[in-house]
Image 1 (tube, helix red, strand yellow):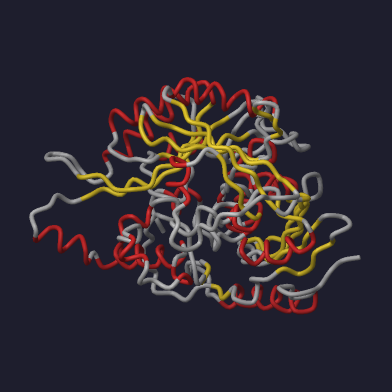
Image 2 (cartoon, rainbow, N blue to C red):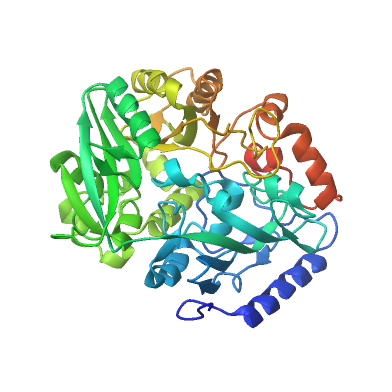
Length: 469
């Protein structure tokens, strides 16, 4: 029987909210830009201000119901993973893939891609979606499934970033869990050894005789890197807490194993935004002790960064001090496993950013549709049966004399493309149109766009991702 409990909104409220969203879209005059009015965002590319109100999606931020027997959940598109996990964990279930930050929404992860340490066995968030209700640019809500009437929209939706429509409801499969996660931190002094062991773990789903349910890694330098291997367990001799004064990524260097509750494991990176809150001074113990625990969250930090991006307060102070301007280098890229070492060595040599996050992934069983060469998702064409590694790096670099803002990002794009990789589009992109469409959907995207947004009410993917509109 489906469960409607704490954190759930029920079908009646959802139906009313969905109908209200359709009416909002219909009231926007033709020719006016359409976008969402969201309280939080995990995008790291600036957008031009249209001075137009967005669609109010505040009533579409809950879980409709959880079915613990079928292991499914019906979820509104703007529900955060924090809300979703709070509704599913009491049933001993969790989403197949939970991106690392609390306020990432389910709809955002599906239309923008998400990844985490279960992705080596569970793929990407959209691969556990059974069906979606999508508000299209044509002003109607359609139900898209892998092999139904709107299968073309279902397969093109991942990595479309709202350019094909907005998910109003998603039905997803859920994974059974245990109360705790046992962590092993395996150190490597050679990047090649780390990549080899990572590939072995992905294939065998075990290491040194113990099952592996989660795997990610951190590169501190070419001579110090780690795999973090997690295994569900029903018992734990102790549990660590990284939601206050302790810092998770530093624990990787100082201990060989650890235990976390499953809830704390899911959000282990959120407290320190991986390691990016260093820029805010929050890893200084004296500063950290002054900050209430409730503010040690990625969404708080992202609001501070968006304020700085808009107003340039610290950039102005640095300029007055004679410091060089800085380029934001905030990217996640996917490389085939066999090209990962080559990319890491190039990156460590050319780009002064550390640490670097690693997360292996494989697509799950291919859905009904396939768009050539075993690539079932046309807007982010990974191949089934191949292991990829997400490489994440999030910081800034000084702009050298004679260089321009964006030069480092452009060079990263060039190298990633040369190594048969792709980059996520949540952050700055600099591709020329022909190159962009060759990598992100091309003709397939154009056909789906014409079918579901014939009047072009929603900006297309290139306009959103590169032109920042």
